[in-house]
Length: 347
Image 1: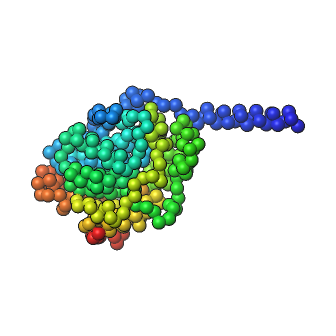
Image 2 (image 1 turned 90 degrees about the vertical axis):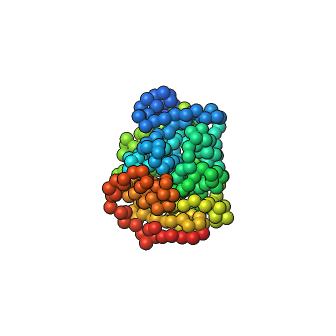
Image 3 (image 1 turned 30 degrees about the vertical axis):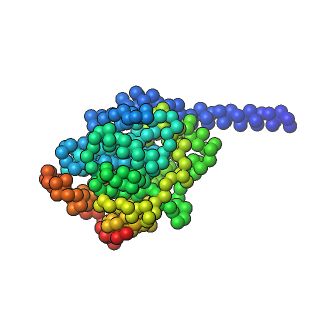
């Protein structure tokens, strides 16, 4: 009997070791990741605090400036569709947050809405950027409204894309497995050392309405960015429950034109949150997209980009309007939207 237990124990240890060897994912050197993913639009700038920030830049610097902020675990690549659609009318900058994409960050950096807003302020100051429209998705949306509150002098328009920050009335209908594991210290420790491709795939397919958008190549790019040195430590140290919460009192101070968009089928940030953002921000406009999930900029890039362009065309001062310097490109057919499309709400 004892010998049998020993044999079983040895087999279990071997299986665990084999699973670990299969799952473990060592860091990929920055130089290797950069060589694979940087391109002609890539720019880098060193910021105080030991940041080496990667961003992509498109369009004429004389055109109205649009700064794009991605979500948790994502990168500048989230905005490739928007950048292609808008670069003839806007000066587009999409940056990588600390611990994301090709941006290098100091050990121990904490991902919070206020910290990310201050990071964008630091970035804008270092580049001496003029006032800009800022658009953010998910965590980046949380950073965008925090930027509008903490550094209002930086921006002239705000676009929230399935933005994080409004406290949910009830738990999301479906939480990606990675987020559930992140709730536990042991889980976070595990995720720092393995190839998270299976969890990334499951999470992204939860995010979007059309699962076919999440290809093996799409997942591999996410996973390789996350395996850059130090990135997983930053990502896995996030305290989701400690993020700043939006509310009518704080959002009522936002005084720039605001567009709030959300997928009607988003299971992470449900449309009710978007309605509350739009109601709390004075004069905000709301667009809800049917059969779209958490990532409109990826799921319907042309339609969502054209809605943004149309909004900015009517809201920016004439001297900053795209029409003042660029002829419009042919628009794609308007998106089929819900009855809330372009509904103007007051705070």
